[in-house]
Length: 181
Image: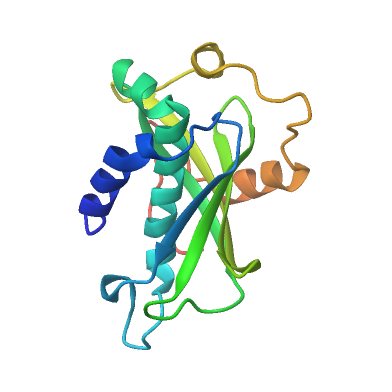
């Protein structure tokens, strides 16, 4: 909710930026704002994922995917995320969020996102997302029919499959009891 205004501004102004294909890389220039930092005066670790939402919305808006999704009543949801930090983003620092789809399978669309300053990666995340409609997953066939086939050289890294299997929780229709092992 704290980035709602920034998200709405981004969606409104995306048409003024060069159009992209959903399979392209989005580069979104930003600056660290006081609302992004914690008591250590750098971007809070939890804020990175929220800021990366802006990068995915930029790619979807500039590629026309966001309008198509809204027309079909599809909503994106995160299904899994992992992040690694290299350096801290500081108050007022300029950076870009680089966003690219690195592959998809029958369960998710996978993004790699990077926080970049002067050509250096400060943080990198991998996000597994789903598209849902009326609480049910949208099929890969429907997604590809709407957005087109990915480039022939787009191949999901093998480690992503292991990460998803070892990190996944049971589906919402199966029990997931809270018991510490």
